[in-house]
Length: 393
Image 1 (cartoon, rainbow, N blue to C red):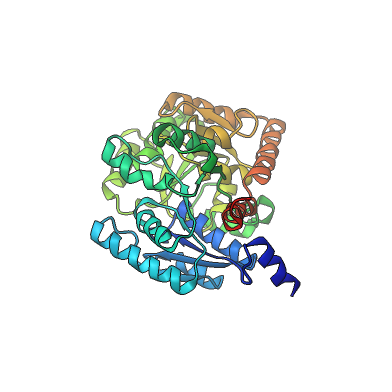
Image 2: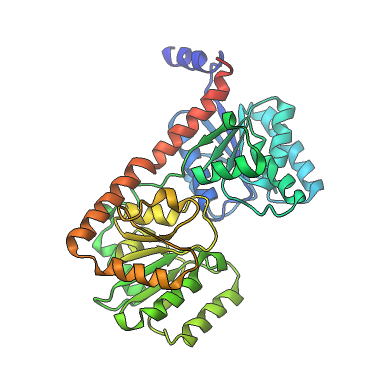
């Protein structure tokens, strides 16, 4: 009785918990998908009713295990006719399930989600996850759906500034909520020696050799070629670099990386190891974690996960990394695309004495725990929903 009364007081007379529909293209892998799943779980734990609509993918299993309902719809389509059909289906879904808020996390599904929210006369929320291409008016129009929400969540101050400058987003609608990571997963004290031995054996890592790791899908802007060029300058140091991530069908790019490794005579010094299912163990095996993106990251999960694991992080000085990495305190920042600067900073990180390394690793872990806990992200996002559910004060 008291719980029902509390819910009714907080949410405009409702006697049932709110129902929130998150919409995204698919549930494959990546920061958008991870944030969606984490929020759905948090809502379920808080007693709310989460729904997720997407074209499906392997991460649907995580929703199933958490008891979160997934509705499979082709909302990844950019075809205008299909988008209009998706709007009708989302509208029907909102009426059938009494959805209170629609939260769109990508452009293609955001357009039909916006139309459905307006028809249903319910709040519409977006999360702006990236800068997107905006070189012409047509692209900017397509992207503009992401600032048409009643609330617009920016994943960093960098993104908040970007949407203000490019799309003239109203400041009163924007909420800055950094992405969160699972600090129980990315915890060096919980990452066992057995897991590290298993992964080291799988990758056939040599004993005693310092490891530099660049995690991320294999694509040009993630900076794998910059790290390879940096490793060419560190050839005589006895360091092994691991490129961790899938090419996701970009076989030509993988071939280019292998050729560059051969051309720089780095066989045995740089390896492509593919996807990894135990990134916490991978981080802990590493001495230096690199994020060498040549284009600004909206947030930069690698730098945060590396710091959470107490590793020495070297990231490029633009985008979200300028917020997530405190230069000289929790990690190092270098000029994007500068292989000389990257090589010099990796060497500096490897040459730190034990006391300096311990100070930086401890500061990095504290920074990640204080600012980037996924529970904090969830609380802040629920607060945004509550703003809209409570209506004008």
